[in-house]
Length: 183
Image (tube, helix red, strand yellow):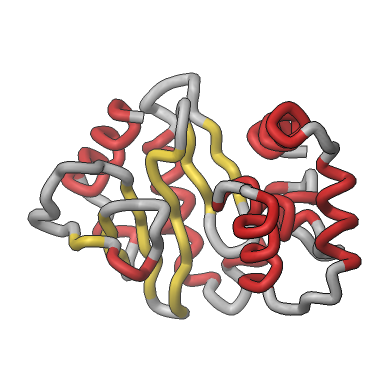
């Protein structure tokens, strides 16, 4: 299991006094169907924060992306039908890995989380023609190639839209590196 997810599961036991298995079973037996309903149950009834609730809800699903140990297959699935965008991802990962040895590349079902001590960015093939890069830089105004992330993704503050690997330039890498350094 992803080390970050395992740490969250360990912390759930410390914070609630009950194991993650207990909470997963509670969600599975709740009769609730929608992701948001399950999140509401954990957050409003049991005092979970968003991140912990989201992890438990995902783990309660049998097809959970957090349960897989084959991270390459998660990335491959993200780019199914979007193969022309895969060089963008590959070029970004190659550049990001040069930032330092403390980077965690954590593929999820729909995106790849970029972590240091905390998430500093993400890479998501949002459409068949575009990859969105999210960077987390609170208090920094968007400029140049960035825009406010807004409702696109609440886990990051800025978004960069890329349609071709040739668009990955010094400015793109600098935004990611600044976010990494602030994580």
